[in-house]
Image (tube, rainbow, N blue to C red; front, top):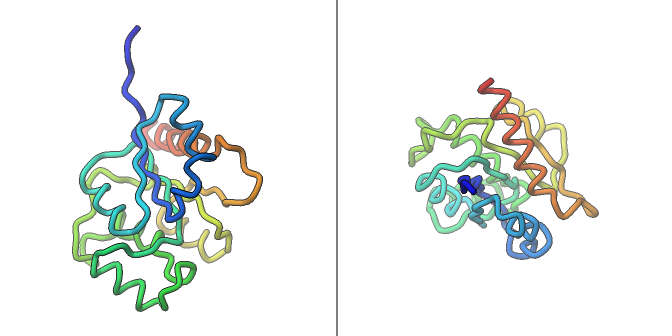
Amino acid sequence: MVKTEKTKVLWVEDSARLELRNLTGPIYISGDYHMNLAEDATSAVRYLQSQVYDAIILDMRLPPGIDDYWIRVYQDRGEDKADARLGLELANWMFNGRAKFPFTPPAWVRQYHVGVFTVENDADLHARLDELGIRVFQHKTAGLADTILIDIIMRILQEQASDRG
C-alpha cells in the first residue's frame, strides 16, 4: 500500500480549543490531515511564514497575540474582536501585504487556499471577502455537522482544482 501525503491545514480560530473535540475529531479520525491551530493573529502569521498549507480555515474574530503590530490594530479598532476583524486584516496581509505590513506575507499563499468559517454573516464582510477573492465561506451556526471542517477543506481543495484546471 502506497502512503499518500496528508493534507496540511491551518485552522485560525480563537476558540479552537473549545471546539476541538466536536469539530476536529473527524479530522483526526480520518487520518488524512495534518492540522495546526493558531488562536490569534500573531500565531497565524508565524505558522504561515514557517510552512506551506494546502488549506487555511480563517475566523474573522481573532485576538492579536503578542506582536506589537497586531496589538496596535486591535487597540485602534476598540479592542473588540467583532469590530477589529483581525481575520480580515490577516487575509488582507496574505494577499496585499507587501507594502502595508511590517512583515512579509508568504509567497505561496493564494486566495484559493483560504476558506472563512465565522459567526459573522453580513453583507459588508461578504463584499470584503469578494474583493480579496476568497470564495469559500461558511457561516458558523448551531447544529452544523461534526464534519464541517472536512467539508470546508474539501471546498477549498475544489477551488484550487478549478483555479488550476
